Amino acid sequence: MIRFSSRSAIWLMVAVNLAVLAWMLITSVREHREIFATPFDWPGFAWGNYAEAWQSADFGVAAANSLILVATAAVAVVIVAAPAGYALGRSVERAAASLTLYFALGIGVPVQVIVIPLFVLMERLSLVNNLFGLFLLYVAVSLPFTVFLLTGYFASLPGELEEAAAIDGASRLRTFWTIMLPLARSGLITAFTLNAIGLWNEAFLALVFVQSTDKQTLPLALLGFLAKQQYSGADYGVLFAGVAILVLPMLLLYVWLGRRIIEGMTLGAGK
Image (cartoon, rainbow, N blue to C red; front, side, top):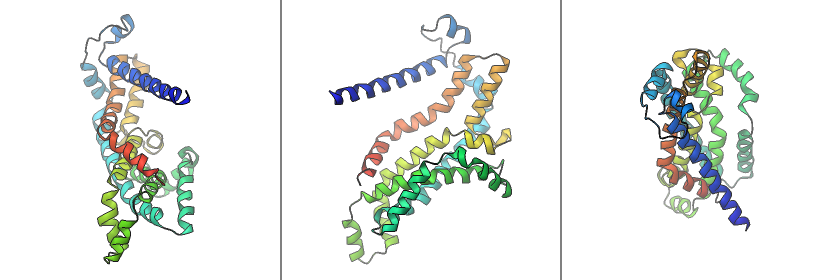
């Protein structure tokens, strides 16, 4: 009975989320008057809403900034976290468990708590209103979760492969690079995808540390577009088109790599 109730609750949540997504996409191709006059009719497919949102919100520059930042930061996080996760996951020393707990505690620290000292530090380094500075922040705040995730994944890999490599005379570095890293491909893809989705939607750090419109990310451009719509008279069809522009890329990425994400998360919880 409990299992049936849990499964029903999950499917209900999935149905609600799919309904909200479908409503957003349908509304994004409707005229403003049509949304309120006939909210449940078949849409008129006003594809011009997307072009108007793209031009009005200056999404071109913002999308390029977000794409470059998210891609480089997500890759950099995985590159830095993979050796750390391997060292912590395969180590038998007691200190490794303490360090893993240290990274786990870092996940629970809200970025809002440390934003003031971060701003002071970044200002002293002349990295405020700087895309490279935002890149460093993205990498730093993403490391605790990524290291913790990959630590569990590397710990779940069979130790016999390491023993065989050691018997053949392979060093720890060569074992990691040629044997363990390829085996952890699903975990690496999971870490990259989850970080990419999180950073793509990140707005707080960008709002605090970016001050020029030419350096804004896509969420900031959407916030500015929302404010502009509120003052000039909201066109909800265009507004929802702007929201869809932000949501759809990461949704497609998740659909493409969803099976690998689930595989990486479940294997990473093996130990």
